[in-house]
Image 1: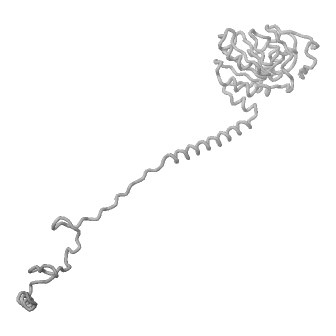
Image 2 (image 1 turned 90 degrees about the horizontal axis):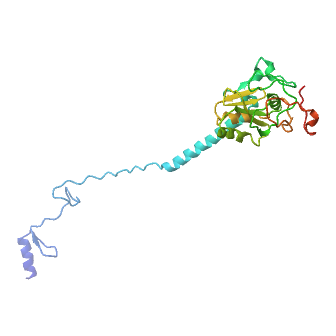
Image 3 (image 1 turned 60 degrees about the vertical axis):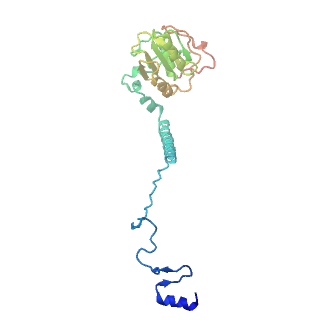
Length: 271
C-alpha cells in the first residue's frame, strides 16, 4: 500500500490508532481516575485495612529478683542476730540467771540463813533439799567434774557451791540411761559435781550458791542455761579451787584436819 493510501484510510477512519504495533480499533487512551493504583484483588472488592501490630508482653525475669530478695533477707537476719547477740552478751550473769524460767533466787530471800556463810563441824540441818547455801563443813566436796554414784554429805556440797560449783542432783532411782545423759554434762567440766539425792521432789535439781532450778526432764535445755550462767559466776569466794576436796560418798560429813589438804590448795576465805 502506498503512503497516500494510508493517509487516506486514517482520514476516513479517525478511530484507528497506530501504536507501532497492530492497530486496535476503538481503543481509548488510559486515563488516571478513581481506583487507579489500587492493589489487585477481588473484582469490585474494597481495599484491605492496615494490620495493627500485636504487642508481645514479656514476663519479668523472677530468677534475679528472687536471688536479690533472698540475699537481702539473709543479710538482715545476720545483722539482726548480731545485734541480738551483742545485747544478750552484754547482760550480767545475774540477768542471764533471772531469764531462766523457773529459777529461784534465794539470795533475795528474807531468810538469810539459807545463804549464810560460815564453817561448822558435824551434821547441819538445812531448810531446803538440796540446800543452796548456809553454814557448811570446813571441807568441800571435790567438784572438778566429779560424778558420784551415791548420795554425798550436804555439808561438803554446800562448801563446793561457795567456791562457785554447780551441783547437779537427781532423784535416787532414776533410770541409768537418764543418769548417763546428766553425767555427760558434768564429766570433765571444772566447778561441777553430780550426785543422787534421797526424797527429791523433782527428777532433777540444780544448785548454785543462792540459786536453784528444779526440773522433770534430763533433756531440758535449761540445764545447760543454768550451768552456763552460774558456774563459777555464782561464787562468793572467787579464785578458790574445786580440787583437793572430799571424794568419798555418804551423807555423814567428814571432819578432816586442815593439814591433810594439799599444800598448794587455797584455804577458804569464809569464817
